[in-house]
Length: 232
Image 1 (cartoon, helix red, strand yellow):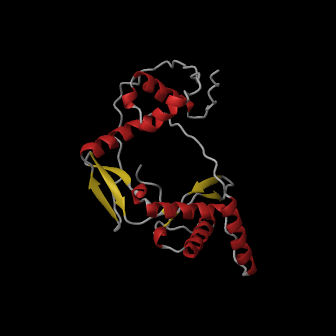
Image 2 (cartoon, helix red, strand yellow):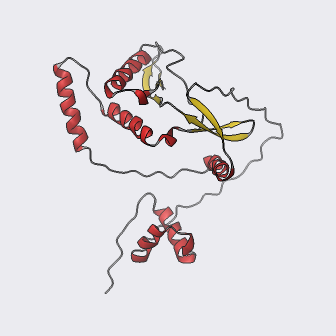
Image 3 (cartoon, one colour):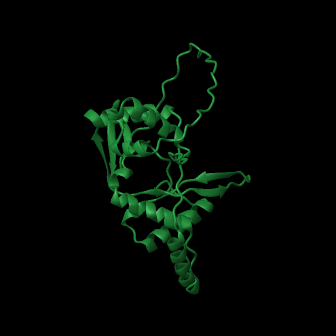
């Protein structure tokens, strides 16, 4: 007797179902790794969520005011590279995808080694009167190191005179979200960034991180240490 297929229902099961239908109807369009999965274990049937038909109300005929975009300014470490051919087409499709709902998934990873190393570091820092290292410090540092290994992640997209460009960055500036209380008691998030974090040692990064958080909470940020993201 054939065994029942294992359940593999996840937040991305709907995507797996679509790939499986493509595998059944036109397997040539499916990646080889998925072919191996589907050949041995079809996915669980996933019931799609009900679709609610929205009533579209026509927009008023008044012409919209033109959107004024800020002038594009580059730092000494940034460079604009025109996108052509396939790269330009990908950029066009990615821009169009901004109107499509995003699908997200999560992963569980072991952190026992990270936790133990953090405990040892904080024990030493406590003996020397230093502040504690948080998981946020470690995760932010891991992001900086990952970007140095895969520098393309640090690139951005910009349009100049209507033409798509890759904004290539030579430095890694990482933003840190800081919860700040205003004078009226209203709380908000500021996102100052640590400049050229990729050129720092972990100790330098840790010091810069704590200093920028302290300045944010004291209202002592400057234009060179705090800026909103300019590009997608």
